Length: 218
Ligand SMILES: [Zn+2]
Image (cartoon, rainbow, N blue to C red; front, side, top):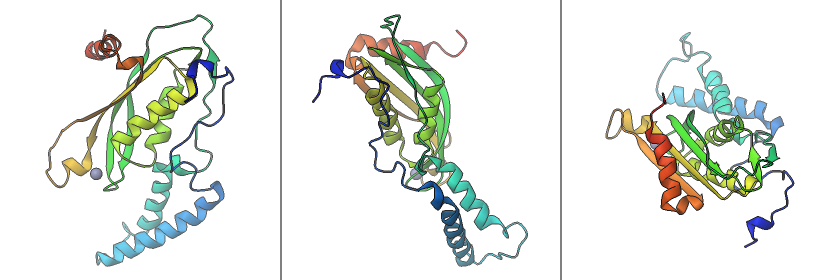
């Protein structure tokens, strides 16, 4: 494996490596909406519902458009343009953005899961604008997802884009597939974490967790 310290300082292009990036080309979206609407209409028919009911008449198309919106991360060109900057101050402590809200859809049930992400990294030679961290999260959230995979993808993106000393991502989420069906555990919180580089060290991880433990009003 290449030594990350040898990585050139250029802001690099796409660092996508996951299999479901860019799988719907931008000029396919119109056709995708038409086809999804046809299938939604078939589902409504199979449920013996009356598609002439004014509340259902536009539902197939409404759902199709909503899917394209909620799954926008699958559409070609959806990757945010993440500019990185040289770390001119040689900042070498933790940068953390916490309590970033997100909404995603469970790949197993196609119902929402939602919550907050806490994202931290310790820079090496490049830093990223703070407004970009929520955009990276949103890009990966907007597709059928697993919370575990979402957590890993955000960590991998930052690792590959910045080659920092370390990255840590913690996501806390509620899953409607757990709360509305099956075991029906209202309010259950699922927590996942991904750790890269120096966050494997206890003292670094403890600093991250210390920031999180402070509550929102400090
Ligand atoms: Zn689920």
